[in-house]
Structures are given as structure tokens and as C-alpha cells.
Length: 246
Ligand code: COA
Ligand code: AMP
Image (cartoon, rainbow, N blue to C red; front, side, top):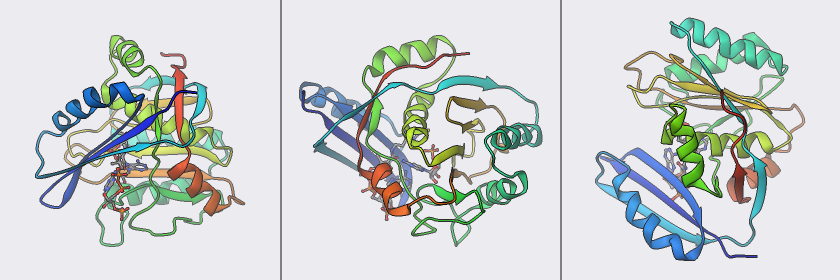
């Protein structure tokens, strides 16, 4: 078995998180990746690059399939998102409450959370810290260049590569039923909903100019929260190939 290293970059500007990226690579690729990461954020006044050898690596054969949904309005886009969530057993009224929270600032000070919200089918919020939430880390595509090329050919962006990797790890966990995501960047209005099979990239999922965003992981009622955190924060995965693209 080859040795793999996780390289994590995070950057802030005036104390605010502006960029975060992760790669999992073999040792000889570290210098190349490290030299690329400072180019990611447009602006920053602090950057942290962390390199860790992974004790164990797991493989996921295929990412989620990817579909794009184009609708005209934010209302229609969220309606589609809610319909998708309903197909996997998430009550519409319940999902609406938490989705609205993301759009208006889900942290206790009405800012953005630093990670994802976890919501059970009963409607309980299960994060240990409601401002921090939980962050999914330790995941990448085994052949990132190839996957990026294929996605870009179909009009997707690097952002989709990162979000698809993260979401594929999330949905690989049996207790996570679905994910909803909107970016916290005011000019990026495309979001997604993911289910066990498919990553639905949805245009116009939030209002242009809104600086609020976040993620919701919808989980089964009896989810063991410590095990879920352990999976999301510590288990390392490489995804071998891309699912179907549409
Ligand atoms: N958002 C906001 N703040 C973040 C953050 C994020 N994504 N990631 C880290 N921070 C800040 C927090 O203040 C955090 O403190 P906390 O644990 O009390 O919240 C602090 O940085 C240290 O966090 P840590 O977990 O030690 O960071 P790290 O050096 O291990 O890096 C990242 C983690 C940045 C790689 C990871 O969070 C990330 O963003 N991964 C990429 C996600 C991605 O691909 N998203 C899809 C793009 S569409
Ligand atoms: P981004 O996809 O980077 O625009 O992030 C959108 C929102 O998702 C952020 O505001 C956070 O609330 C949340 N988030 C960011 N990184 C992670 C992560 N690694 N895992 C889970 N949630 C995250």
C-alpha cells in the first residue's frame, strides 16, 4: 500500500475565512500541490497549509452521479430542492425551517456556521456546537486531473470537483440521507442537493448578493453522533472514478 498525505489549506482575510481546500496525494506530489494552493484565494492576509500523513486510506469506487437543474427563480429552485429531499423521506416543512436558517445566517449571531448543520428526520439539530457544526475532511479524487478535465468539458467548475468529493464521502455514510448546500459567497448562487445516488447541482438556489450560506446533513433518527463525527472528521477516502454526468 502506498503512503498518502492530506494537504489542507485555509486562508482568512481580516479574520474571516475566505478559502479552504484539501488534496490527498502521494509524497512526490506534495511540492507541486503546495505551490498551487496560495493561488486559490483572490485575497488573504493569513494562510495555513497543513500536511499530514494518513494512517489509513479507504477507497470509494465511484462518485455520486451529477445532474444540473436550471430554474429561473430562487423560489422555484428551492421548491425543486425540497421535492428531491421529500423523495428520500425528509419532511418538507421540517427541511424548510432549516433551509431558511441557512439563507438568513444559521449561527447563533446570525452569521455563517463554520461547518455543517446536522438535522435528524425528527427535526432535531444534532451538532455538538451550533456555531461550528461539523466539517467533512480527508477526501479527494484519486485522479483529480482526469476528473476535473471531464467535469470542465461538461461546463462544470473546480468548485464542483471539491463539493462532489465532499458530498460523495458524506452520502457514503449509511446514516446520512441527503445534503443541502449553498455557498456563503454573495456572488455564487448555484447550490446543490445530494442523495445516495445523485448530486443535483441547482442554479439560482440563493439570492444574488446574499453573504449567507451553509450545509445541512439530513440523518436518520437513531444516528450515533460520536461515530458520525469520527467518520466525517477522521476517516480518509480517495474516490476512484466519476459517476455519470448529465
Ligand atoms: N469555514 C469556516 N471556517 C473554517 C473552515 C471552513 N470551511 N475550515 C476551517 N475553519 C477555521 C475555523 O475557525 C476553525 O476552527 P474551529 O474548528 O473552531 O471551527 C479553524 O479554521 C481551524 O480549523 P481546522 O479544522 O483545523 O482546519 P484545517 O487546517 O484542518 O483545514 C479545511 C480544513 C479548510 C481544509 C476544510 O474545512 C475545508 O474547507 N475543506 C474543503 C471543503 C471543500 O472542498 N468545500 C467544497 C467547496 S464548494
Ligand atoms: P463553501 O462550499 O466553501 O462555499 O461553504 C459553504 C458553507 O458550507 C460554509 O459556510 C460552511 O457553513 C459549510 N462548510 C464549509 N466547509 C465545510 C466542510 N468541510 N464540511 C462541512 N461544511 C462545510
